[in-house]
Image (cartoon, rainbow, N blue to C red; front, side, top):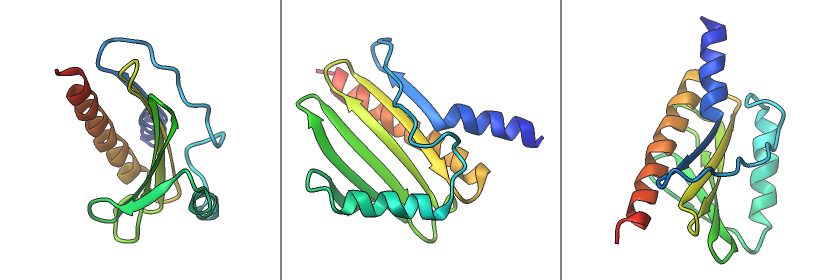
Length: 137
């Protein structure tokens, strides 16, 4: 059972989607495994806090989103769970490529594996909806 759950998590942790069947390039992993320490997540938050190209805001219930533009047609998005979120502590990093209608996403967690897998499914649904808005004229 644990092995099956870890396979689901591994698949959910590195999601690459496209609304036009374009093959999206995966994001190079920040860490070798999706299960990481709380301090690794906190260190990343601190790095982003000092990056002038990244803006953060609370987004929904118990989530903080940080985003910025790396190129004219590519946006980076970071999602961090806050205390009270079932997956906390967890994070996800995405690159949204508007020129090819692709979203490449990875994620990491230090809390519940099941809650993290659920978070990644919800983020994939959000990515799908974002791409559909961009594709429809």
